Amino acid sequence: MADPHRIYRWFLRLYPARFREEYGTPLERQFVDEYREIQGARPRARFWIGAVTDLAISIPTEILHELSQDVGYAVRVYRRRPLSTGLALMALALAIGATTGVFSVVNALLIRSLPFRDPQRLVELQGFRLGTPGAAGFTPGEAARRI
Amino acid sequence: MAKIKRSSVEALLPLPLPVFHMLLGLSEGERHGYALKREILQRTGGKLNLGSGALYGSINKMLEQGLIEESEERPDSHLDDERRRYYRITALGRRVAQAEAVRLRQLVRLAEDSLGLPEPA
Image 1 (cartoon, each protein chain N blue to C red):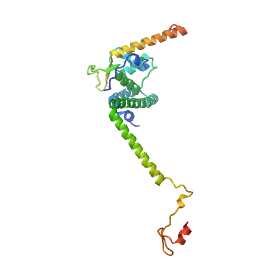
Image 2: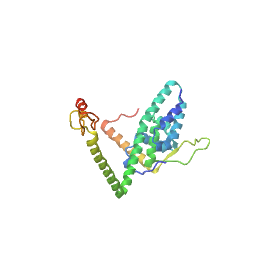
Image 3: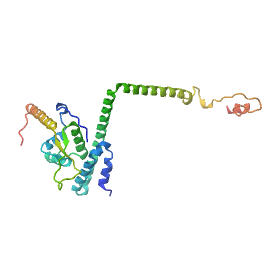
Image 4: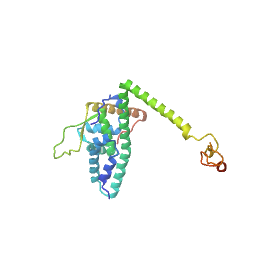
């Protein structure tokens, strides 16, 4: 059977780095202490269910907590520097606008299909003389058959 | 170390039950996380069994709010485990716990007036 301590340590890696650095060691220590006190397969299974449930609740809670702290910090920093924030937003808006414009052109010219029925059957014939293959490499008779 | 963000007493009420129990435990002296958990378990007759993640999540938040702080003092070396961290209640933490107790007392009085609570057995 796998070492329970190692399994629990693996789960701890799912916590945000800051929380793990701060509390990883006491969490591990507490797990070892509690696990050692429990004897028997059933109580240990119950203990594992409790530990995994606790992790399943507390890991997302800590991730959200850190995320909200980071967002709050970013908002505070940007609010203190309105000029650079405005410039960054303007650059972002221009970049998004330019990308959208280029994509619209590429989409209309290259990606979207032509406004005809069965556009894959459309061919272009040009500059050929009777008896010699034309630009498409067909004689007129071959070209007519292929169409 | 967690950043400390001082908060006003009123803004922190009502306290989550585990936080109130942890403040009560720490008001009697410094404790490490596991000792707090065991004390709460005993105090509530086994009804409030905090998981390790919930326990240290609450400790982290309480440190940020300035309700508790990490203690530098350690027990005797033969009793100590260097990996353990000890915490103590701050003056703000004590005021918040008192305010929460007053809030709960008012709530119980209200319930008593409305429902007429039976005497404890």
